[in-house]
Image 1 (cartoon, rainbow, N blue to C red):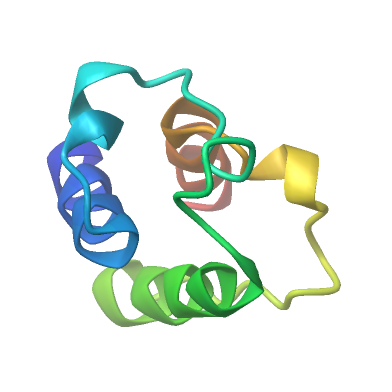
Image 2 (cartoon, helix red, strand yellow; image 1 turned 180 degrees about the horizontal axis):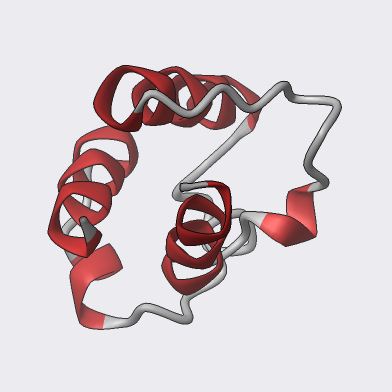
Length: 76
């Protein structure tokens, strides 16, 4: 599952740094913006069958690969 999440993040962020540092802040490093955030939520739904509304999560809930992985684990 983690590998799938990292594949998704690498595709959305267009950078493999998301694999090297799982605690990198995706927003501060300009790897993710609001459009990419929406792509992430769609990707999570398509890959894991987990529907997350943008209003359900705050930016700091999904700012690092580790936090995104933890969110998906919690919803699985």
